[in-house]
Length: 319
Image (cartoon, rainbow, N blue to C red; front, top):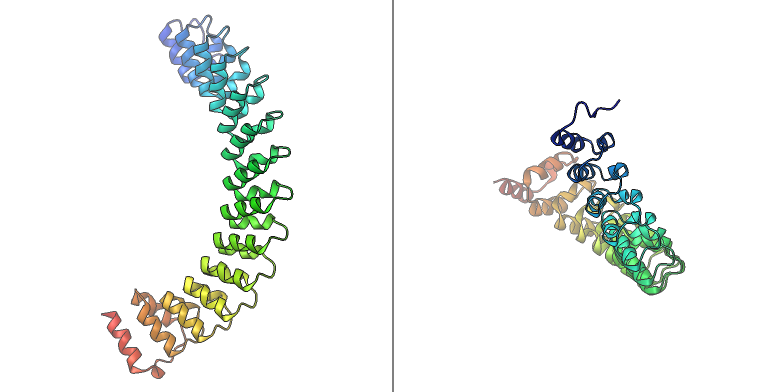
């Protein structure tokens, strides 16, 4: 049912009030003024569909509110087209034979809008992947430069690049270490770059060398959980980076436990049957003794066998 009837809304003020509430109300207004038209498209750009012979000012306001309003404008001017594209790059689908400038504006707004551009120039391709690396999936035979810009914007898009060069691989893992998951048979250099960027990327590397393992845990101690049969030096590097990493180490030596405690006294919660030496060091390095006491209470510790020196240290730390 029409909520706008001429019998009820005759004044300009009433018309303005109606379209400001719902732009599409303009369809019930005969010969709306420029002011009413402007208010309508500012409320809903697509309301221009109900305006005959709209001026450039009305068209411009419409596409600024909703770029897709351009679909209802015949022979839009360059200014109107560019405004639509700045609001929504995908509206290039509604523009016939877009110019180079229009293509650039579109992809700078929404990189993946390149999907709707035939034979884009390299400048357009570069602008697209710079805005959104995933745009490369819509580019046929991208150049090396385009590939590198794409992976630098988002490393994981290497998934969409066939036979990437070493340079492209390197750019990808330096942006996102986990992008190595999409690289077949990565070289040692690529592996090293990946784990230096993100230690946990080692999970995607088969049989990593000791050097790779060390680099991974030095970047992120938790990477130890992805390393099978880790050596003690790798374990030490892991807990020195993050004491809590000891939770992923089975049958850790006292040296490893000690290194973990020195990095974080609360790591004792992950050590089964800690020796007195470990307990002593945990007390020494703990910042919050109340929290440590809570953790120690959860351990099956025979305090009668703990030396007076360690007990005294605990009392001193409490005060």
